[in-house]
Length: 178
Ligand SMILES: Cc1cc2nc3c(=O)[nH]c(=O)nc-3n(C[C@H](O)[C@H](O)[C@H](O)COP(=O)(O)O)c2cc1C
Image (cartoon, rainbow, N blue to C red; front, top):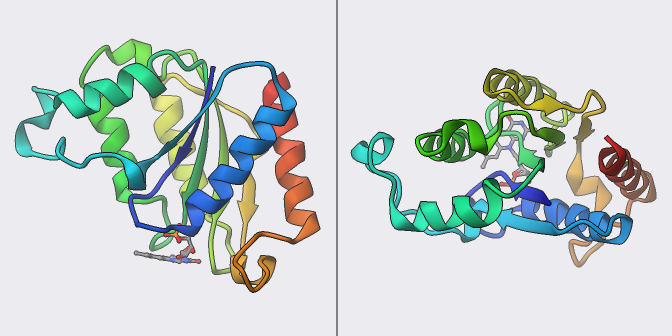
């Protein structure tokens, strides 16, 4: 099973638009089960000082459905202040409190960075690579920075830039084989 994680809790994020596209591309490329987890759609009642000892039932349910059964993850994440969103790190930290080694250890990940600026979240992807490697996750070397996203969409906000769509499809296919 592959879980695509849209890595911000900002409502109506651009990130989720790209994550949804990626999810659809994966579904077309593999018979494997593929799921989409959008941090902007999950409950937020698991963020409290005791979260490091006592996991909220809402988070346990998410972990049981999207994290523990997955063998592969695609992290699609926007660039916030030159890095990946704190909400994503918080979610990762919260998951690791329970069944530490069954969350990310020995699993595989692909990374996609989203930014309005020029860098395509390269720094955020490098930082997340370090975090995931620490947790024992193998990160696919081919990471995909998507920059200047305002130039890639039509008036309705759909991603129409063929080069970007092709790069996403190619990475998705590579990840299926990874
Ligand atoms: C708190 C915050 C910080 C941001 N920092 C950066 C940044 O450092 N570099 C950049 O290119 N874009 C930055 N952006 C713009 C996002 O990359 C842009 O909003 C893009 O649409 C993806 O974010 P979204 O998924 O929240 O829509 C930032 C946006 C927010 C909300």
